[in-house]
Image 1: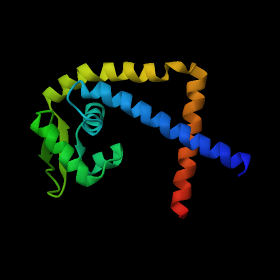
Image 2: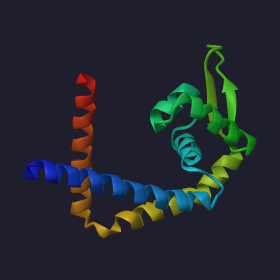
Image 3: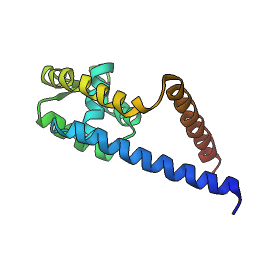
Image 4: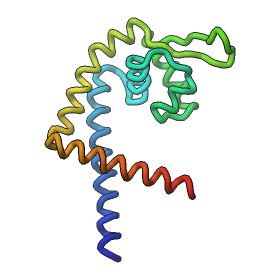
Length: 149
């Protein structure tokens, strides 16, 4: 096995383990508010971007449409989001954050930002920028590779 192959395998292992630890940390902090990461993702999108057609939400937060309906149902039952039919196209349904959902996010989001900042506090500002560029570079490269497979 070549040195490049060894280094590539090690990079993959480090990326996957690091990602797993970061996800666990975020999941823990969000669960304190009775939400799972998918629910938080939907709320966060609606909180920052306003009402969205349901089909756009799945694309933006990388959630399968079958899971998305379940997540929105749960958020709706908690009174955090509502559905609104589109006035011009009966096939489209919008999801919007409710006032209660906004209150929850007003409380959660600053704490979530703090948690994320703490996760990456181990990196100096220039290292953080370099990290983002490198991970993005790999992600874009893999996206292109996947198009040819």
